Length: 358
Ligand code: SAH
Ligand code: SF4
Image 1: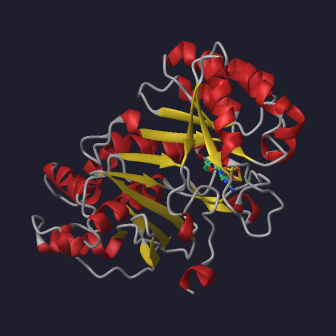
Image 2: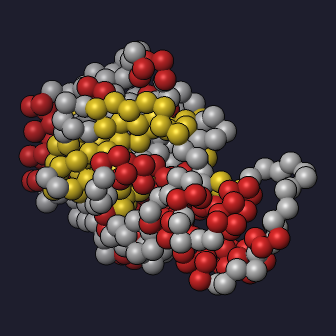
Image 3: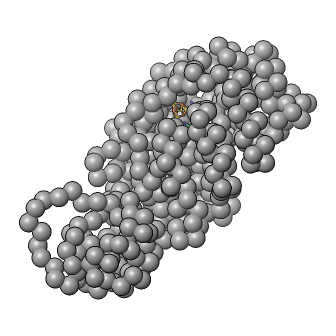
């Protein structure tokens, strides 16, 4: 990069790098190279991470010459909002496009002065769960840490209020993109970033065991949710073919280790599907899986996915699950879907511009 004080037009075309991908150390080195004082790194970081600046020209406490050198050589990610839909319940769903044309969805859910964001970790998903719209649309690519972070900031800026919690329950399997996810969580957690408490940052995984082990060893108190959906091996294999190689027995053991190591209570997600995972055998197996373990079960009414053969269970059946789990000392809640009128509910996030813009 050129010295900010001796700015020359660049002759060779080059790919601009996203400033979100620079570590603090790298930024300090960059400003040294530009003959700028070290405090510039801090100033720029504030604009990038706390203020979510969308152009270098907004960075008014930097010299003009430096702003134009940055502008010429770097990008600020450049997330573009393609579509925004507002649900009757106040949730807003966004379709955001990154500079390479790939798009993902994220959702903002306001509730009594709080704002929860559901963000995507990948464009599409490689895991192919049978009941999930994202799984059906295939995998496009991993998102970078900056791209994950930007979704949250986009929602924050649109609501113009602080984000109080984030769940990585949009598109993608976070533990198939571990490093970027961890780095995004750390920035979301950092006082120099979004400043969201670690316990309010939740990763939901379909059960990628090696990464659950890794997650257990991270120093932060991030929250873990595991999509269980069945505690019967053959049913789970059918519903979630992408994690067939990790047996339920293995998952059970690893979750035990997770609890021992972290002392934190994991959530198990269970979308109730009529006649598939809501039978007596399934309920008994779920109780066995959770009893004597630190666990919270989130029962989700299956959301309608176009072309899917699965039907949601009845409300009465969901209540029966809650009652029977309580009998073995396991707390369960029935989660209401937010934004189902705009297809923003779990498992319905899918890239479909045509349908969204109708
Ligand atoms: N890939 C991760 C996180 C994204 S999915 C995971 O699977 O955990 C977020 C949650 O939505 C998961 O619990 C997932 O199982 C659930 N889900 C997917 N499709 C659904 C549907 N049609 N109805 C209800 N929940 C669904
Ligand atoms: Fe991927 Fe999660 Fe959907 Fe399964 S449920 S296909 S892991 S996004």
